[in-house]
Amino acid sequence: MTAAPGFRRRSRAAIPIAALAAGLAIGHWAAPISGQRATSRAAPRPVASRGPLLPAEQASIDLFEKARASVVYISTQARVIDAWTRNVFNVPRGTGSGFIWDTNGHIVTNRHVVAGATGGARVRLSDGRDVDAALVGVSAPHDLAVLKVDLRKTPPPLPIGTSADLRVGQSTFAIGNPFGLDWTLTTGIVSALDRSLPTEDGRSLIEHLVQTDAAINPGNSGGPLLDSAGRLIGVNTVIYSPSGASAGVGFAIPVDTVNRVVPQLIATGRYVRPALGIEIDEALNQLISRRLGVSGVAVLRAAPGSAAAAAGLRGVRERNGAIVPGDILVAVNGQEIDSVARLQSRLDDYNVGDTVTLTVLRGNRRVEVRVRLQPSAQ
Image (cartoon, rainbow, N blue to C red; front, side, top):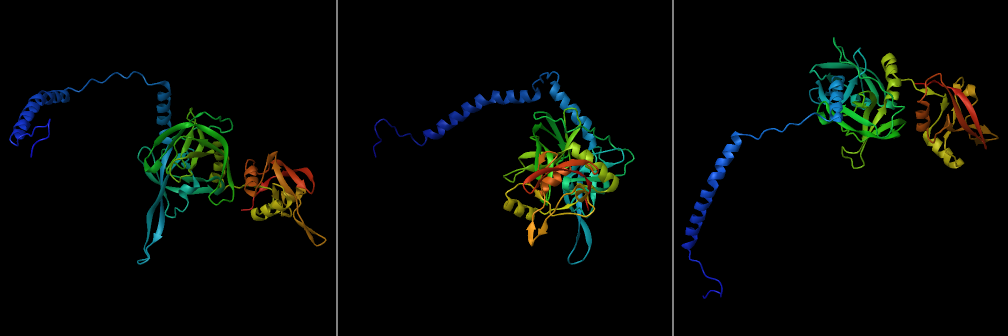
């Protein structure tokens, strides 16, 4: 077979000879490089001088190092029974975060961190101490819980700030134990204020939440949200993630709510919500609101002897064989309400004994009624 013009057939003997020559050439050329690499390993490059940290970096470092000792790692256990042997034993249930509230060993965290912990909870401090914790009290409407540990020397409590004067754009610092990675610092800003989310049971709302873009993940729950002065401004509680992943918008319970609820939990083990003394029901409320074409909360009944009865609030009544709707509450101190959950949350901004002004739709008239808040029946 004749080779095509312009191409020459190379003999088989020529191929190994050419390869050998190429190999010798490469080896001769690569030998000095190998020597250079050995020399570079023996003499690493000098480290360039960094200079001082930026003021913002140093401030973050100082904040973390000061607050770290006041943040704790919480692990919970559930008590289970072996179906065959009937032996009772504890199994790990979950982890979360918390922080030192006072010098008496009280620790604040989220209710959902300790919910279902039938086998108890343990607290690990930043210095390595690991101790059992006793449950002092919980407030489901606020997703807050208080634990107590017995320690000879308690880490310093976090300084308390206020959430009343927070502004969007302020720096935020979250310290917690996401995914079990203890004492993790994330930073961000206040993204929004006065957010509302339903509680786990959906029966009430957690109001005035602080929204932040500081990374908050499972395990951060119950940990502190701090301002740039290292003061507590919120308790990290939840992320909102439409995708279901641990990435989304983070929310913290405002410190003003925490500072109102926690002292009651420590003193009595429970939080007593302020109330009007009326009977209300969300399902009936929605039905009545739709039929009347109004937005508010229908008073079904004012309990005898209650604050509502003393103020003259009217419930549903019968007239000539027909059911006559009672008062419709449309605002508390000028703040509109559109559901039972919203009414309860509005009242929760006040204390038992405070007097509030209710805007009431009574027939075709709007009237204002002043009511002195009473303790809720629990």
